[in-house]
Length: 318
Image 1 (spheres, rainbow, N blue to C red):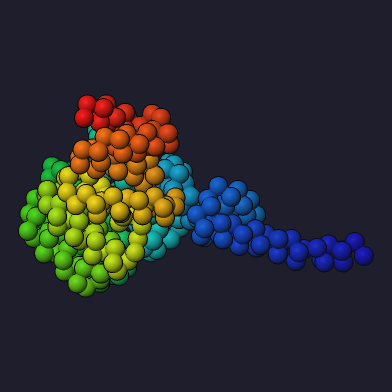
Image 2: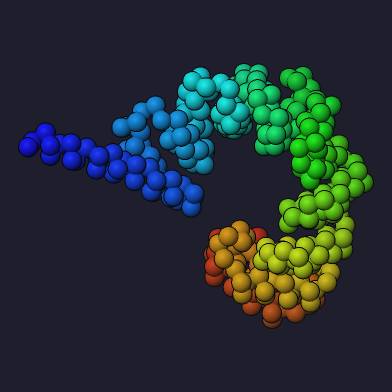
């Protein structure tokens, strides 16, 4: 009877562990990492070699910017299966982020390993987009003395073009920006919009115009994107440009008010910054009363908002 009772419970124990993994995985997919982590760790005690659990725990460590923890998980996975492109990519990425967090002298010692694992990931998976983006970034950001190379970045941009035309145009635009060739960058970002048309493609072109002091083009591009994608973040971006460049004031006011009305955490920029931009616009058009009203709203949300404190002093001088 005792053995029979044990045999009855054993499948239930396995089911419980499987359920824990599935619950943890659901939390992970919802980006609820603090809830997922202890469940994965509990599951790993029962299944210490399970690769997917260790990969998830490496991803959670990376999300928390615990690069040493992520490196430990990914390193073991690479050593056990060096033919897995994702493991190679994630290990190279964790090493890269670790290198950025330490002194430049120590970071140099990581470069060869970072290159090795990114390059291996690219060799293993001819369709791996993220790896090729990482290699474009790596070869642009490294000084020439330790292997930086625009031509190598262009090689991986060409590979991206073959896999995904929109990523190819975006990466070529990024390289052109790095080389301070705004005309070429504009051409490639416009091609990316033509081919892909995602919010991100419009965002890259808008940012290019902003960085090159072409605010009207920036506003027009952001407005065109808003008509298609209806993303609330674009309301803030339009309002910010209107405030910074003292142009299209009514459009900026309307967009910022719409941003505040529809704001959620996913929009990224806190509401206090939208109030700050509204105050700037009203200051630009000489409406001191409304400018003070909105700067005080910004400070009510964030009393230590340094830019808002400085702006309030400027408004009071009107």
